[in-house]
Length: 321
Ligand code: GLV
Ligand code: GLV
Image (cartoon, rainbow, N blue to C red; front, side, top):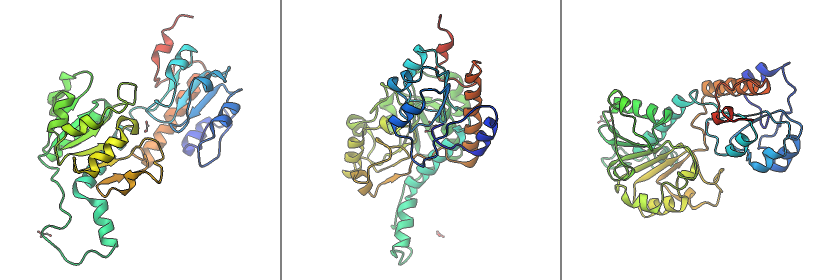
């Protein structure tokens, strides 16, 4: 177990398995993990651990990898599958927390909440003024959602209260939910051109790496606001810097960066029109507890060679041996 998870998860494991727990505040170094995984039957890991081919192949007894997160881009799924190792993850229990936080960022960027707080604390609040810290209306604006899985849909549901026009794009259209959610399907290009707020909810894969780059920023409205609670790698950081610096778009709010953590000398940190939070969209007490329960359920099932309740590589069960 590469980090201490909430007690509720540890309690489920007590007496059932022998745990080699990395107690560090920071992730175990790659070489340390590689060494300590050699005799393990199960791995409970975080998105901060690089679980690549070399690591998986250095663990001959491994029966299960259980990730304490929904995204599994840090894990080489192909190698795990080839070796017959199911990979667990935690979908569903962090959907609402992540959608809520997406809205927290969206509203903060729209109405400049973090800038306004800094302004106040610095003693700039001299009077009420007609044009101090003006932001953009969220109500009646157009919201563009890129990636329409569980989290993208939960974000759309929340938009209804703001009477927004909601456009979504994904590799596949889901006509049956369009009416219920009040959303319209559009091409990526249309979403980029027409949305006032653009929010990303795709997993990081080879085809979504730097999905938002120079060309995409050039298509956006001058007052567009970009929100990223997906993965840092979905946005080209140089293109983001350029778009914000030259006011090609209005502002952005990101919970994820490439790399993570963001280096303290990153030029992004100097931009007043960018909000950056440290990858905390799922960080509610309730979500993190439920993620612990789910990760442990996956771990225990895998150790018993039972089917994982939440498996990220279900094709592992269809292979012929
Ligand atoms: C968090 O980013 C997750 O994938 O659960
Ligand atoms: C603002 O506080 C107003 O009363 O319009």
